[in-house]
Image 1 (cartoon, helix red, strand yellow):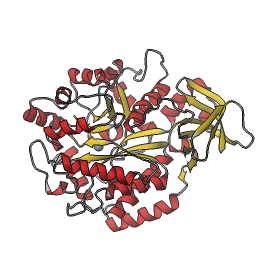
Image 2 (cartoon, rainbow, N blue to C red):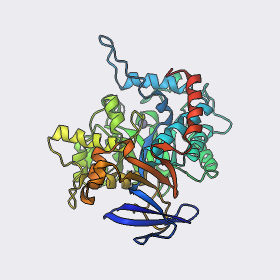
Image 3 (cartoon, rainbow, N blue to C red):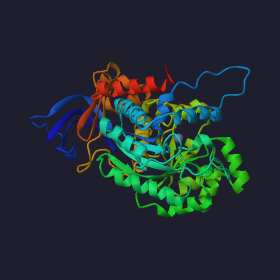
Image 4 (cartoon, helix red, strand yellow):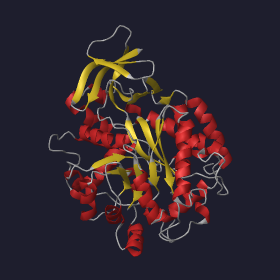
Length: 458
Ligand SMILES: [Zn+2]
């Protein structure tokens, strides 16, 4: 049993000041009160709910920043050329490499205030494309990385069957492939079994994209979904994908989904960048979620999601770091907002009927849908009976120190950076403090060794 006293704790209704949170030995919140308990740790900080990272491909962290040599006078560098670089990397990674890269990445996430991650995982098989004897070998390496770093993991084993609409998988995709729905079911079952050994892991379901899985299998997987289990899918990220889908199905991707499956609030449509109004309205009407990854979408030149219109219909959205070109939730929220401001010439992106407090609304909206992306149903930031997960902002920073609580969330979201974070608490324990994960030295050692062996960055 321990307790922390904060200068402020953010609730869905605003700040509580000088508040003490007590937790039991498992890190579950037992009490939230204004009175300080005798042995309470006094924290010079403001606690926000931990950020939810709703979309990650851990191995891509190893190539962050390496696809930026753009030469003039040659074929345009775009998403598809970036993908070739990514495939080449995917072919080289061993289970040990995977664990080392994911551990480094998840430590970075925790340092940056993420307490949960949904891993969109499709690097399933060995380098020759043969399944490991433990079908969930690579998934288990992600679970180990999550355990080392303390982050809550929702592992989403991805169903990846084909190379494109109606075309077979290519040689470079051989590590991703489940040939049919039954093979995918086996993979999910193996992942669920292994996950019982890891206290921080849940299992979701996912389809890589409409181009990567056939119609019958998509229908089957949609019915296989259990209550509260999240279902993730990449959709409408690239214009070429829309054209290919129109050619193959005679419909746009989200239009096809709306007509074919029971799209509901378990579904998390990743990117959903290019939507017509019918699709945009359909997602909102069915209460499905979109997962926006502004730094990756910007980096890949995807386009800008129609967030302002989506929000007018109370659409649900979360954020993800996807390719990990950035691992900073403040940057994701700002990029998301500024993209809308730049095209609308207005500044009120995150405004709701009840509140014009942008930073607060952004935190609340991303958190609520982010929790669902993890397969977690609680909708209260800090609740007795739930794990205590928080990112704590340093109250001694000059800007924060001079700010009254009314402007605090906006100051944090619009000016915040990694060093604004005093630390991150997961399951009631500090996991990172003053920008450093508590297990960082060990994690960095393994990561450096892996990067030397892979030799992609050095
Ligand atoms: Zn992705």
